[in-house]
Length: 93
Image 1 (tube, rainbow, N blue to C red):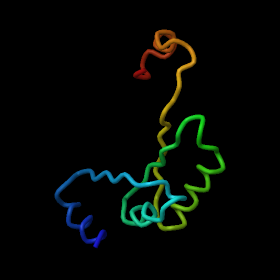
Image 2 (cartoon, helix red, strand yellow):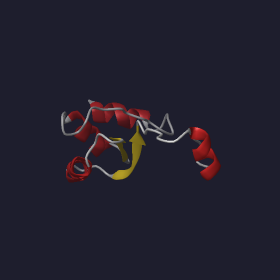
Image 3 (spheres, rainbow, N blue to C red):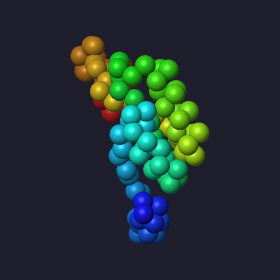
Image 4 (spheres, helix red, strand yellow):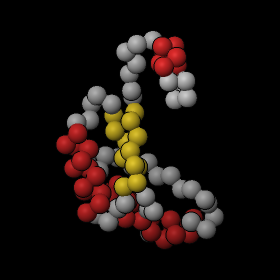
């Protein structure tokens, strides 16, 4: 049913974004990863350990998914943002 719904939507939309639970907690994300053109791994800053992120990537790829990148969420700024802006003016901080 999921596969039919996604295949029906593909000609109608340029981009379809599906948010799922953590792959190591719920196999639902693996099922979607097989159907998607690509998956983006969301990693929580300072909380997700590197071995867990690597295992998640391995599970997605072994389940037929294609990991195309990752996003770092909940990043903390330890120095004032204006200093980051001075040092990295094009980062969008």
